[in-house]
Image (cartoon, rainbow, N blue to C red):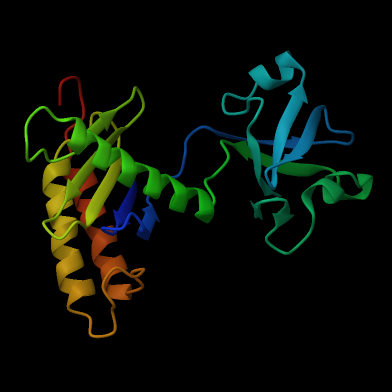
Length: 225
């Protein structure tokens, strides 16, 4: 997929909706025998690769120091526990559980981290407006890195729609306005939705995912697009 995630931030800087629509390609899975030839440590409630032989790590394109354990035997890992409640380090320390398949990848953002980042972007957006030499600046509309672009569209009421996408993905401006249209139709017109509050609406989810699929298929990839 070429569109990585969508954020909706209210006018106070609170994250009211977030959707990840992309599975990172930089993940590696390997079956291990006991003992592990990697050192795993708990850091910030995540199990991370702290040390490993360089030749071993090089064999796995997606495995690097600092990457997290994402799944064990096909079962997702949430922080330091597996989906069925087992502690990861304790499970991997038991020889009886081997051979074991472990999937590694870049640590996933927690809900709290996403809330914090949304608030930080809201502040940066305001700073960008204040730094403008001209009055009436729109604020930050795009940030570019070598691996993704962040696109932002702010409505007249202060709601921000943020899309993270592949740098080569086309049609993001149209997508942002389409997301605003979906928000207006399926959130604002929902009698059970309260303004500025988290969006929990099945029709909003369904139509947003459909819009992302259409945008990805229609997007043009290539230099300069």
